[in-house]
Image 1 (cartoon, helix red, strand yellow):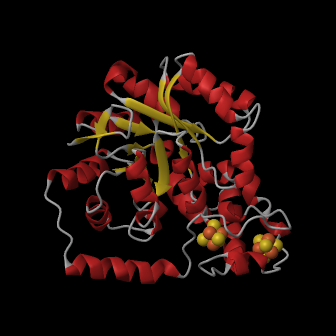
Image 2: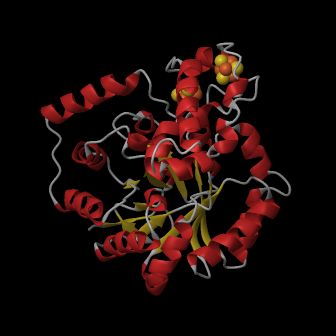
Length: 343
Ligand code: SF4
Ligand code: SF4
């Protein structure tokens, strides 16, 4: 395992991290084995979120004994200072630690959210206070909006930017990555498997490893999946013409119905939580139907409000058939809610 400088922090971290969504669907014992395997394999960067069900607790339970050897990253979706302060304390308790190494504002995709976070009484004030109190070491941000992500990097306020990057979603390589490197902001690459749309792990990592100074954070749901990903990093990387062809063919296959979670389609005049509805099947495959249907219920229950006005389709750069996809995903969600499809 190689260890790379994490932006301007002075900290060196494993060149691959641990994304902690998939351990949600494991028992505490199974999750513990997977986390331990990752740690024993040299992974030092563990990324979770306060919204990821019991993921923080699982990490705290298994890795508190090696706390000083790992780098803990977590996030909050809240934008106001009061709730973010509470979330930081909650994460500290769940993670069984006295400090969070990287606290991130989670999925900040709109100017409105950013204004709330950075305004008076907003989440940034709370994070800076927590940093002054020693509860968090560094502050980062995550987003699926390219324009907003570039703005955060430019702001100089964050040590890291977390943004999707995989061979289907390559947009970040054009401007965001060069900008972050120039500003010495660490790049966390979320969704190395495009949220489950890429099933060939070898291909996924061949692509990622051909880009310098990235910290991909794949999710793992078994000891074998840790061994597999780590083995890619232990061997030389070569992307050949066959690989490029295979990547193109995956892109073609899913291109017509793949939501990038960029949120350009928002807001919906009828109040539909479009992105949540669009990514629901992938979420369910990563979390488990039971957990995902509970986790996403607030957004999914807005789908029946869709008046099929077509406004979102006009705004989507990928012209996805949003209303039809929402209907299909809502039917899946309802079947999960009623327990018709297994865990
Ligand atoms: S088609 Fe439906 S989801 Fe899209 S903007 Fe109109 S009401 Fe909202
Ligand atoms: S539906 Fe289109 S615009 Fe909306 S989040 Fe998905 S890819 Fe982006």
